[in-house]
Image (tube, rainbow, N blue to C red; front, side):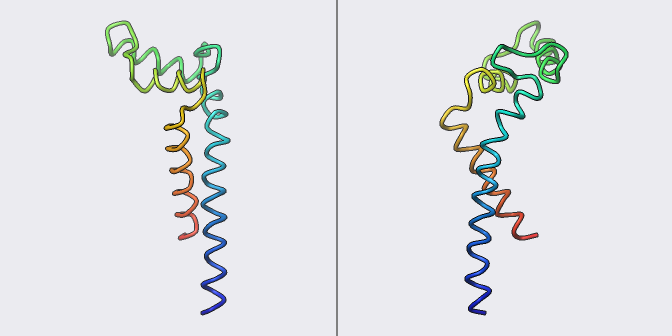
Length: 101
């Protein structure tokens, strides 16, 4: 019992840290891979398809604050402080859940 309690806590902490760190590192990479780049939305990408669908749904323009607009902002300028906290929190939660499996 004594060994299992002290062994599980560090493994859980490592998994949470790895999940949070992995999410923070991979978020900009994933955004760029789907087409949300620092130069704008890449032609022919998944992001371009999302932008086209959003523009058609909104009568020709992409609405401010929509998912496409927020992701494009993150792709161009990086994640804001709040977005960084949210992505890290979700990654940490996924790391914790992975220890339960």
